[in-house]
Length: 344
Image (cartoon, rainbow, N blue to C red; front, side, top):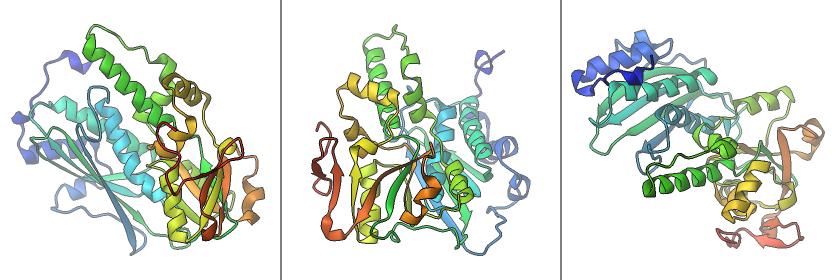
C-alpha cells in the first residue's frame, strides 16, 4: 500500500540527533557512516583546491508547496546548486544539506524531500555527505552546499571571452518560466473552485522544465568529447539577457544575438501564444532553464556545427558596439537599456 494511507509520523517523536541519524542512514552517500560519527563532514577530493557553492530556498518565496511536490523540490534544489559548477566546466562532487522544518511536516514529508535529493545525487554522481535538521517557524527552508575539486585545465570563467567568439546555448529556452505561469494559473483556479481538477497533460513538457529541470552535466561531457573548451561560460539560472550581460561586462565586450536563432520548443511557443507573451520576452527575462551559455572560438565552430544539442545564437563584439538583439525584422534592440522587457 502507498505510505500515505498510514498515519503520518510527527517529527516531535524524534530528537534532533535521532532524526538526523535516521536521514543520514537512509539517504546519505558513501561518506555517511564516517561523517555521522563526526561534528564535521569530510570530503575526499583529489586536489587541494576546491570550489564551493550554496543555495537557500525558503517556502513561499522560492517555492509554493501547493503545486510543488516535495520530491521535485529536493531534486531541483540540488540541480540549482550544482549547475553553477557545470557553468564553470567543473564537475560537482559532493553536497551537504541543511533543512529548517516546522511541526506541520511529518517524517514522511521530510523523507519525500530527501528522496528527491537522493535521486538528484544519483543522477549526477554526487555524494551527500552530511545532513542538518533544525526547527523553523517560517515553514520549510532548504540549504544546499556543494563542493567540487578544481581542475585548472578545465576551469572556465565569465571574463575570458574574446571579440568574434561565437555565443552558444544548450537545449531550449523559456520553458521553465512558462511552466511556472501555468502552475500559478491552476492554483488561482483551484482557490476559486476547490473542486476543479487541473489537466496539465497539454503542458507536460514545460511543467517538467519547472518542476524537474536538468543540470547539464551531459553537455560538459559532450564538449569534452568534442574537444571544445569554452572561452567563457555560465549556467542560466536567470534569463538569457542577464546571464549574457554578465559575460559581456566581465569580458569587457559587446554582443549581438539573433531572434531567429533562438532554440525555443514548440510547446513553449504554443503557451506563449496562449498567455499572449512575446517568446523573446520569456527567453530573455525568464529563468530556471539551467541550460549552459558559453562562448567559443570561431576555430571550434566546425566541431559543434549541426549538433542538435548546441545552438549558435550570436557573437561577441567590441565593447563600444553595445549589446543588441537583432529581431527577425532586422531591427537592433538595445538590451543594455532593457528596451525588450515584459510586455514588449
